[in-house]
Image (cartoon, rainbow, N blue to C red; front, side):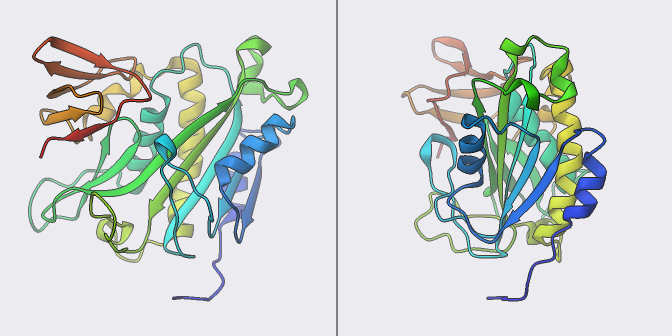
Length: 284
């Protein structure tokens, strides 16, 4: 395992983001239980300033529905971005985050083909997938959490036009496999950034991801998920595939609506799947 210190581009990120988010700070920690958990703890204590928190190692990283996300130092990129936000509609936020991250890592999708690089796609509602000759592999995941209040003195200008009662502190957690990892104990083989672009490491990926992500969140605040829907559709790995829902239903995925709901054609008709308690997987 590489033990050389990781050189994180904290200053470059701060310079790119601070004009968009006054008061923005960047913190890199060698280890923590969970970057999302830490920013949520701070928010509940009234510390709601815009913050990027990066961990070289997490001891209790969390994914959707409580799933664990752990990694060795340098093998994954693990970050959380916290900021006050006040959109009119929160629907589709995790999908919009996925679009931003996928486009930052691979701005143009390569055409399908065995000799092409892996394609960075999106699986509703919050996973980054790789597709290609090796089949489906999970590249990363997104976990969005919100605190129900924002300290008034910490509110960013982007939220100032909305009423204080509608603003929340949102924490966007992102975990991405940088290096290949073992598939032992996993239902799906993991993918890695090395399959997308050999030599791309965690610091370089971080610099690519964060500034566009901040701009996307501010766009989402103003316009919602609707403008992002076609961009999600271009990377939708479930489109046209048979899927099984965790509530026992099965059908065929038909993309997502303007509110981010997954549209599934079932024997009972078209269903708009929005529940955070329902997971979706392609049929075997």
